[in-house]
Image (cartoon, rainbow, N blue to C red; front, side, top):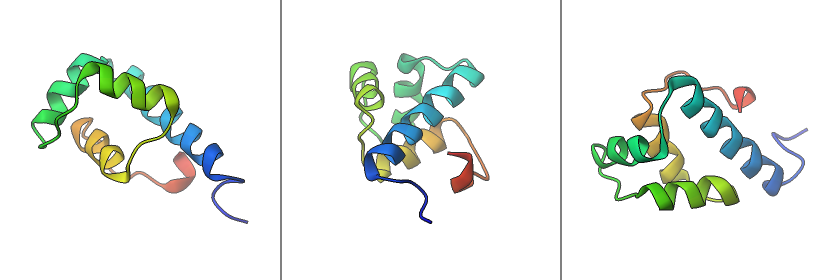
Length: 79
């Protein structure tokens, strides 16, 4: 069996995972945008909110958020 039943399911899980990590760390969308700028990403609070709300974003965005939140050792099964 694959990592998800569908691409849409995986997208939703990834979005929920990132939002949960932000909440756990106490990071707001505005703060995340600032942190992402330090990693070379030109994101705004509104663009981050939109991407996480609709659940679709590029892998580079996912990696940027992971870097900005200083997350390490993520396993696929954690998502």
